[in-house]
Figure (cartoon, rainbow, N blue to C red):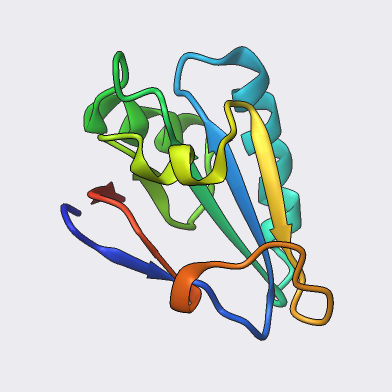
Length: 114
């Protein structure tokens, strides 16, 4: 949904997966995340950063084919991925007791999310 805010649950281990819908390795990783996401103490968020070629429809098709029932977002202006200075495929983990990365006010805002 356009303009949806995705909250990071600081009581759970969060996995942020940076991907593109056409990336074969990303599809394999997304499938593996289904197993990880079964753990109720883990939050998974997938972010498509290939806004030059991917559309919201591409991301929806990717989620339907490979993904699970967790938020999937399209970083349309690449502001999020630029702030993290990363490319794809990349995964970040946020473990409450270790906190290796910090999210602004524990919120992730992206223009298009599913």
